[in-house]
Structures are given as C-alpha cells and as structure tokens.
Image (cartoon, rainbow, N blue to C red):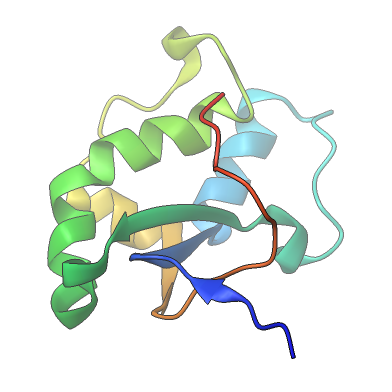
Length: 112
C-alpha cells in the first residue's frame, strides 16, 4: 500500500475580507472578482515550529503577505494602500492554519 509523505511545514490559508474587496472595487470598479471565497484563498507555507503560535509568526511577516496579496491583483505599488500594518492586515484578511500537509507528488519541490 502506497501512502503520501508529510512535509515539515504548516500551511496558512489567507483570504480577503470585505475591506479588501471594497478596496479592489475602489481601485478598479471593473476588476473581475471571484464568485466563491474559496477561489480567492492563497496558501503560504510556514515552518513546522510555527504551529504552536502561527499568528505570532504571521504577524512578523504580515507586510510581506499583504504585499503578495496586493501584487496578485495589481502590480503597480502606487495604487496599494500605504498602511499595511498588522492591524490593517487583520481587518482585510482572514487566516486559517493547517498543520498536516501531504505531498502527493513524487520528486523534489521546485521553487519558481
């Protein structure tokens, strides 16, 4: 019987809340938005040891995550909100954590 290996990471799923969606519509009223909130989730891998207090780790890197979320919609930083603090991050995004990740693919993971 073949089984899948786990990897030494945890995952967080980050998805937008209403303030982020409102901002998208403000920047570009014609922007095509997702039909289902599940379509808008992005996954970030964190170190395994972050599982005990993943929110503390997310707080440390929230600006980078925030900017990555913005970059997925608009590549021009001049339209991005200036305040990308933890406080704003919490208002604009929801975060879920998944502690067990199975790798279903044989071979090495490649960074692109």
